[in-house]
Length: 341
Ligand SMILES: [Zn+2]
Image (cartoon, rainbow, N blue to C red):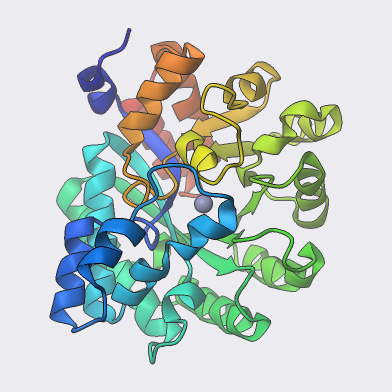
């Protein structure tokens, strides 16, 4: 059996982690105090973590409220972005893609998208230089935000991606997240098209707590190269065929799927079935601090419950690097340095 230390130092590539969904408890407490925010001790101990399954995805999303509150200004956001790179590095990650949703961070505050984006770029730039890992960024539209907020965030994300800020080149991907059925997918198509035309890679949260039909619909409407979760495709031959033939990579996050009640148990998670069905799967942590885990925890459970060994992890990590939105030259270098077989 692979021990924790072996798994920690194992080089990894991670494609799916929300920097605005993963804030250290100590940081939440410090930021709340420094900025005089109304976060009680009791809220911190009972509402800032999800450690056992809640009724569903929406209940888990409600737990992001405290994090949303403390991401209150440039400095708080920059710090959290930096700490996410550090946490990622501690997990043995060599190539990381971190994502964030400007409309989620900005909601109810006098904080512009441009300030949020700049804070994230600065924190990640500093973290990447300090810890020596490759980091790309993905901008997210929350499906639950107003379409006006999403249109404005898209414009600001694309302006950044085309801009001259020193970290702007890292903004390489575009995503939709939150409750999948709140609006028809087609409503987001013009925004996703703009992102694609601006050269961003497309990944879409889909088939997490919904159905294989949603995965098929996402593939049909957006044609993404990656899907966040997509796990409900496991028992649908058509969805599996489309994923396989399209070379689509799934960003799978087992503990997160269990905590959002998207799978009945960790033992029953379809990750090994998807892999056996020939679908490209990768292992990710989603919102590790919120969920009291790290990426090493996900590797340990995949080894223990699904029988994955070093060869399986190497293959999944190589697929993750190949599916990354980083420029090809960088991906090639990362593959050669850390994931040569
Ligand atoms: Zn996610």
